[in-house]
Image (tube, rainbow, N blue to C red; front, side, top):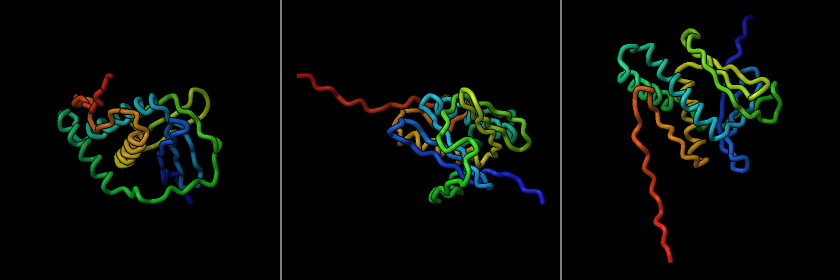
Length: 180
């Protein structure tokens, strides 16, 4: 019997005391991996996620960058609509890297991994995790990061855009200072 290890559930929550996002992945084997994400790392990771999204879209429409951006937005909407964000995260039963979250520092991607892409998340030294992600998982992961970053109030621009699109600047209301 051939059993394949698969990503079964993942979760991203903001921890105000740490001022970090706790990222957890649970496999169908019950193994759970826990990582801390800093504001800086989330900004870097978001850029990588958008490049991965563009790679998935380029496979459908390689010659048209504007169409690729639109395809990324549509894929994101479809994945988020189908995802069950109301399901409670089920903790793992074993922790191969330990129960204490590991601070992530490095990211790499292998886009040529069949229909999927390989996302590697690593600490400065030591072991991390290799995730084989399809387009749906990528966009659900992106949505979880968006939600956790919003709760963190870090002000990171996390709109769904491709490398071919320049996002409009975010204009924030600045409170008027009253001098006496």
